[in-house]
Image (tube, rainbow, N blue to C red; front, side):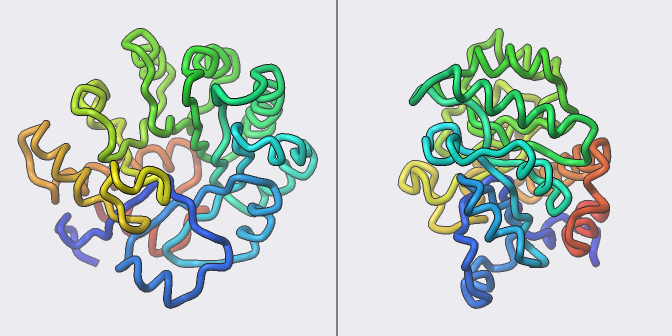
Length: 254
């Protein structure tokens, strides 16, 4: 495996892929490595039966999906953590009861405490309450997905050691607000395909080009930085050894 960054595959740290995806559909991703989050316990149960070399499947309870919140079982959720190193998509959302969402997320964070996992967290419309919850329930594997908090909340998230998965739909000022060494790429496919420019999971080239312009470097070096950030995050959370072998190798080579 080469050390040259232009040979690293595209990385997508937050996308939605159906758990019945076929091998030919995976091949159509052109070798992209995708962290595939789920919305409901049932979807996660199906997804976690799979063993794919370029996909990491997550166990999720989407806060804007009432059926997911209703189906949440703390015991079942803890059991799924033996099958995956990715929790996602979980979090808080302006749609629905904050009390219910907070209760479920508090139990998820309790289950994740001390576990070798990373967490992809949703915060649309409720960045402040999410920051408060993460302050009282810290975890070294936090990734804030499409985070649009205010400057004070951004500073709080950075101080908590959070990483940020960003996409090409985010404005330049939002992208520039985060330290480059804390950034990871995402498409959130299939959401907002027109604004992200992502025709498929792993289509992060528009984001790499945007960040290269903002930081005065090349898209290839931005991709390398993403992989280095993933290596640092998965090393500190003891997740690196739980990744599919090819993904761990690319992280180590970056």
